[in-house]
View 1 (cartoon, rainbow, N blue to C red):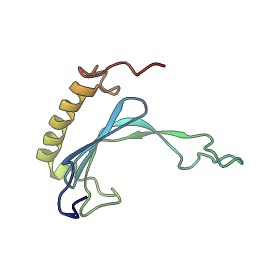
View 2: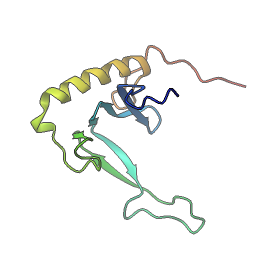
View 3: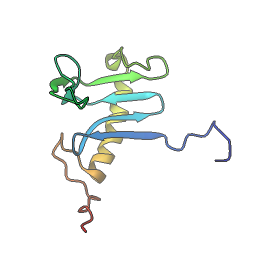
View 4: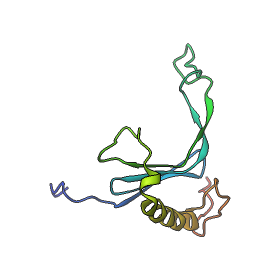
Length: 118
């Protein structure tokens, strides 16, 4: 709002989806994707005639590390060259798992509360 575009509002970003599964974590330009089964609309998935998603394909996503400043398309896994970064990001992810939970590791978060009811 102040016009200073050099300030990042957050240094860490967590990617939760497929219910409460921590699928990836980002810190700065580094993104660590956790091994998991995931759904995709890639072939042989379909889009139905009503333009809504049809059948999806379940794929195995491997553990992977990307440097988004040099690989924004996430095409080159560099986890083997940067084991220290993988370890650092995994430690940060553990903090979020303890707070918010994680279905992939069957972790119940300490700060999880029931959804509001009407």
